Image 1 (cartoon, rainbow, N blue to C red):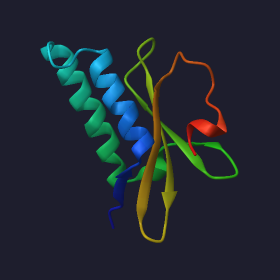
Image 2: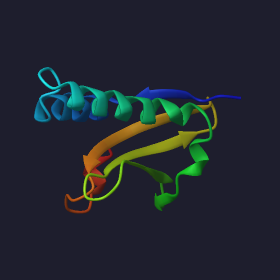
Image 3: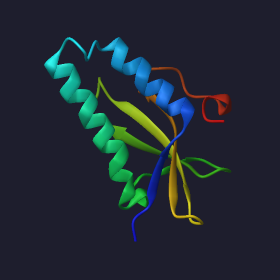
Length: 104
């Protein structure tokens, strides 16, 4: 059974900032990359458990999008009731380690 994907307001702000930062309005390549990121997020509908738990307690998981040096981290949590994935935060992999405040 599939999970529903809930993109939190924090993660939506992250996506909006990334879209502006890469200038996806003006660049076909940037827009294609952005669409790929959105597809990676929506792919969490199926088998979200494939991503490792990186922070316990809380069971925060991390899905990597793309390869170094341009890797982006999609931080999320799985809820079994209802079967839902909450996307909490999206960030570039080269940033400093995330804080609890980044995902709450």
